[in-house]
Amino acid sequence: MKLWEKSTKVNADIERFTIGKDREMDLYLAPFDVLGSMAHITMLESIGLLQKDELEILLKELKSIYQLAVSGNFVIEDGIEDVHSQVELLLTRRLGDVGKKIHSGRSRNDQVLVDLKLFMRHRIKEITDECVNLFNTLINQSEKYKEYLMPGYTHLQIAMPSSFGLWFGAYAEGLVDDLIVLQSAYKVTNRNPLGSAAGYGSSFPLKRQMTTDLLGFDSMDYNVVYAQMGRGKTERIVASALGNIAATLSKMAFDACMFSSQNFGFIKLHDAFTTGSSIMPHKKNPDVFELTRAKCNKIQSVPQQIMMISNNLPSGYFRDLQIIKEIFLPVFDELEECLKMVNLMMEHIEVKKDILADNKYDLIFSVEEVNRLASEGMPFRDAYKKVGLDIEAGNFKCTKSVNHTHEGSIGNLCNDRIKILMEQTVDGFGFAKAEEAEKNLTGN
Image (cartoon, rainbow, N blue to C red):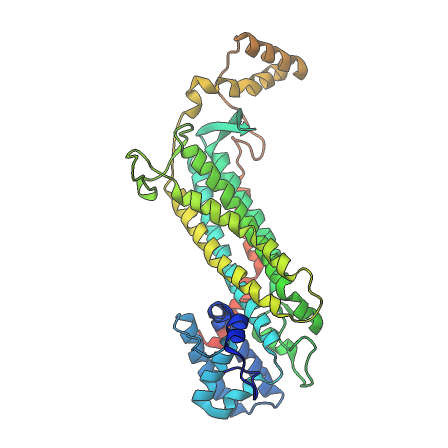
């Protein structure tokens, strides 16, 4: 069934090529296609294109299809082109000709636009929740191990004393910035394109503000041409924001792999969370972190792939945009899984105490000695030179103590302030409005 097909049947090879993986990708969108249709037909009834009794039976059936979709049992049948066609087919099978009325005032162009935006909005909420879970784990570990010193590095050379409180807390704060950017992407996403039709509006007196309110969008995409121009652009913006989170995870994964190696030995991964070798009986491999690093690096490439598909397209719809779904939709699953796995690993990580007691780290306290001399009145440059000459002569003696008190330092992590910043950031998304609207539509 093709919503556009008339008297000429499309060549089978052409059909296979043009549909591609669209039916598979559309399963991601099924619940959101139903939500969009529920809002749209409610609006159609208000302008006289549906009767009240027709609306009631359509909504009842759409709620049933919605439950099918959220339970994972929605299927796009063989010969059915996309999710929109499948939903309309199910309605016409059950309700007859009234099922054919739901498409008035819509095009598949604005239909897939609203599906994508509702999907992105929903999945951004899930990614945010997983980021918060990981954030809480990192903050807890930061507090637990704040007294445990470790080497800090520049150029992979030992530099100055750091701590596990700083290390865990740094990645926690990094997630806050990542969510600030994701919130901006959410704001771009949470605007309603429905009613733009094929990109040039409709002669029906559509109430676009009504569907905007019913779906819980912050506003509509006002200009109908721009609504269509948002296809590809919105996905690129969201993918870029997801890429920031992926970059944070990738860096953390690299640290964990390096710090758990025998040459460092700063942390130990739980035995149940490592894998072995088929030939070397001693091996305990950090495969989760290695795969996280690779998956997250791949995720960071997605905005560039989207850009290369959509970058040179003029205004209006083009089939090129279909390919973006194949690249973009699965990213949420992959990133969400990485967040969950990294959280699990970080919850069970073992941290080594007294790392800096080893004499090979003595020079890491040279800055502490320079600062001590400067605090006693010696000019900083003179103190620096004296300690440098002592190091060259092999006469450097250090006191392995650290007294950092300023905000954000070893002795003053500011984790309480970072937690407040995270809470404010999450509140700024305004997820409750969208959740309430979806609940009102579905009755769940």
